[in-house]
Every structure is written in structure tokens, then in C-alpha cells.
Image (tube, rainbow, N blue to C red; front, side, top):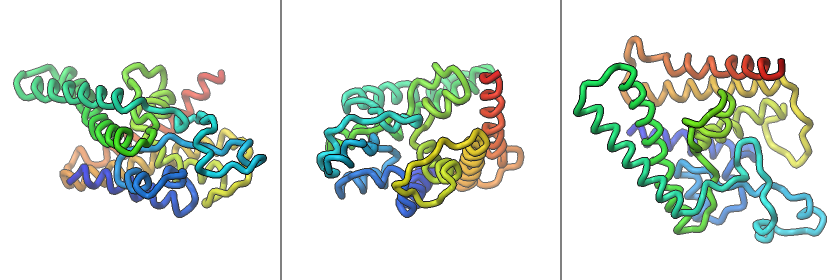
Length: 254
């Protein structure tokens, strides 16, 4: 049931994004691809506006032949072929099986247990996304943007959140929260956007994490109910990520 709720909130955010002309459902998709993106925890590889299409009048169907433009959210990148996605699916299944076996058959030190929980969560979420991504890629030819990318190789807080960890949820928050704040408009238009100020970017990031914390708390409450000492932890964890990113940015600038 918690998994269904997770998929529902992602789908809801995608629909809200569509209503304000933002997000993955605004990509040029056919009916089957649209429904797949709506109901599965995936983000399609983005086909961004190419200046040549305006000049020579290229239609949406022809637009797919134009070079794709990368973005900070890695929307312009491809997660891999369906064989690569399938290999990742089975690899994460083996990892998750190993984690469950170790946790249920051995008495381990607390730090090892916490490490295995983190590894298991990564493997589980990867399974949840690699499976649908494999089907979408192989059956309907939909190119999928990355959703996880070796988070254990992260080099900073910003690298972890913007390039490596659960980019599917991150992109949903980016479209609906971050972009509306940094662009200072709710509905996306064709007008170009000036580079947002540092203050707006930090406010957008902090607001995205606060919304993420609220959503995680709702999912936790839906799964296990209110548990003293546990409830509120996810919100606090995500709420402090904005200040951490700001502090990291200042250190790099200094």
C-alpha cells in the first residue's frame, strides 16, 4: 500500500505540473507513452526546444531527430538501453536479497545494520524504477532519463541530490516547486528566463526539500501510522538539506 501511495504522489505531481505547463507530461508523447509516464515512477528523456525548430518550422514529430540538450537535472541524458536497465534491475534484486538475508539471519553491529538498511533502500527504490523503465524502454521505445546513478560515488551534498539520488522524485519537485520560485511565475511560458539570483535558487531548493519532507512524512504515516520518536524525523532530515546546500555553496565560493 505504501508503494501505491508513493506512485500516486508522483503521478499527482506530474498532473499538477501538466496543468501549469511544466514537467514530464508536457513532453511530446503519444497516448501510450503519456499513460506510462503518468503511472510509472519514471521520467522521460527530455526533448528541449532547439532554436533551429523555430527558424525552419520543425514539427514535434521531426523534433525527435534534433540533438538533445542536457540540463542540470540530467533530463537530457538517457539512463541506458533496456538491456542495461534490465541488468541493473537484476543486480539490485540480488543486492536486496543479500541485505534481507543478512538482516534476518545474523546479529550484526548497529552501524552495519544501518549501512544495510541504507543499501537496501537504494536497491528497493532502484528495483521500483528499473523495472518499469525496462518495460517502457523495450516495449514502447521510450527513452528514460536517469533516476539513480551510483550514489555511493557522490562527491558533495549538491552532487548527491542533483545528479545521483532519486532523480524521478527530484525532477517532480523541481518542476512544481523549484522552477516556479526561481522563474517567479506559476505557469511556464515561452518567454526566456533570466538567470535567477542566488537567493531565489536557495529559496527554491529549500522549499523543494521542505515539500519533500512533508510528502515523506505522509508516506511514513500512511505505512506505519504515528510512532513517537520516529514521526517528524523525515521532515527534519529534508528541511536541513537546504541550509546544508547553501553552506556548501558558500564554502565553494570562498
